[in-house]
Image (cartoon, rainbow, N blue to C red; front, top):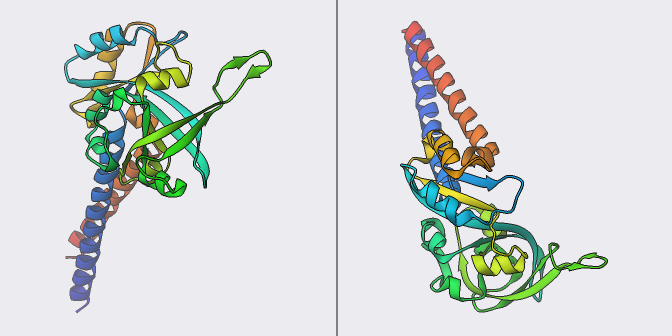
Length: 263
């Protein structure tokens, strides 16, 4: 009788743990798809000088085996305001070809359109941000950046209105609440970047094994670049999910071991 109860208890424990692991693995896959669907897998930055030769560097990196695409990017924090509300946002200046290379964004437009994105002086924002500002596609909002024009008494904030061309929903509240996409050339003008970008985001064919690409990309880009990958940029998510998976595996192994010893 004791052996029977022990067997049933261990069986239920193992079944519960397997179900929990399946749910957590599904959550891990979903989170990774959101992170990797919006961000580049390898991040290339310039050291000590403006990144004005990004086109030449992109051509060299594109020759590395396994590289699928390269996204020139400008990032900047702004205050986003409408007639009823104001909040913080993160502007990502990209071109239309780069948006097409991100199906998570291109295929999840809820209102408006991203067609002809480069030719318009308009922006695309997340659904949660649109709800917070109480706006939709076709409405106008104002972006205020502290990195404005340089005056004799310091740097003045830059304020400029933009029409919303599209509202997207990525399914991750952090991105939908603060992300603003702007055409790359317009972002260069808005942030006074001239003909430079902040980083190049490189897409590879195996994001899980991104470590094997970084050294080749560093060699291709030259001695003045610094290379990072998506695991460092999203270190909190990555570490938590890896620890959770390892702990679950250890607990399952111990339960199976105890079951085998009892039987």
